[in-house]
Length: 480
Image (cartoon, rainbow, N blue to C red; front, side, top):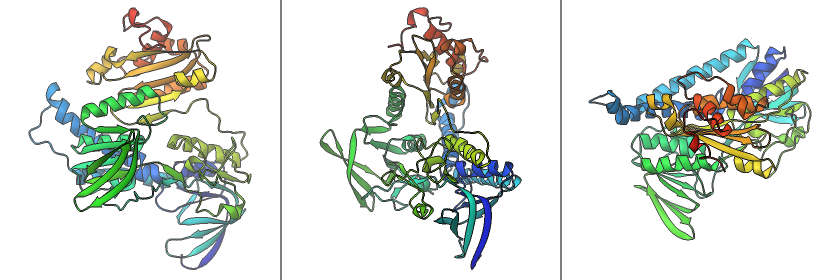
């Protein structure tokens, strides 16, 4: 595409991640002429360097660990079990490639055009598209959707080099396993990939600045995964501030401060995962008149995902937290429908979140503390997986489901779970919250047996004081 060209489109979508490609597909379905520009690979970080590849590798590692540790106890034995990282990486890439092809097909089927390049606004209705070969296009548009996502936050003094010090993108493409890995940051990425490494025998140390892993998550869930990590031999240092990094031929030395005392963590490699920042500063937003928060980088939007320039929209990680793919999916659809003139808006009562560790952690709605702070009258009850038939059949009795309800009205306020498959049934709880259900509505929903979803119904019964699969004397075991 060397040279300078011009084209006109009704909708310019900048970014081909979850929010962007959903906006492109939906706008195309509504009859709009759509041009989607992605600077790297369709699917964005989630598909290529996050959600999908990490879950593929975690699945492989869990399978390996299960055969090695649980297999002999249930009659599955192997005399020559090994984990082949190269084959696992190849399989992961095949999964990603297939999904990426699927996104391209969906865009084409909706009539959207997808190109590779980088976009910068040159005005409120125009942009410059720089192609990989150095060519440029002027793109004139009626509406635009900014869906550029986020990039890893770079901590001064702890910059990655792709070898000894890596970010999540580089870790997911590593060619060899280290003997030891220090992880700076105990958020979702640090916990998920830290456990992946621990499954494969890597000595893992997680260093987290805040007083709990997974800051912001329901505290009981954070405590559950912390105790699990410690039992697995993962060293967890919380309330720890990184103060320096030494890179040496044999590995790294991370200087930290815990409770005012200096410590040192040595490892072969360091994985830095201290958060992400919105990819907004590189877009020429000023030229289009689009406002953004100078400190955070987020682009403020209304409930139709419009920026301060009404025909320019922003969705996904670049718009606002939480940085979740499923939030971006819905925002992309709302933005496209808004452009198409439909009566739509982004409005939710509950946003589910899942951490893919062992046990799996899932949460939706208010915690006890959140509800109390809002002046409600929360009460909670917790049903243990140890009382669940499917959990025993799957050797997955670690975990529980906690229901938070309003004691004065019986309304369901939140559900928080630690246990196998909890991420699969948390959507049921989210649906119930969206519909304004009561705890009794959950209890009276018939859950198929034997499934892990039964734990949700049992927790609701426990909250009501009508337990079926735990003794009545334990009904207040999880309440406050």
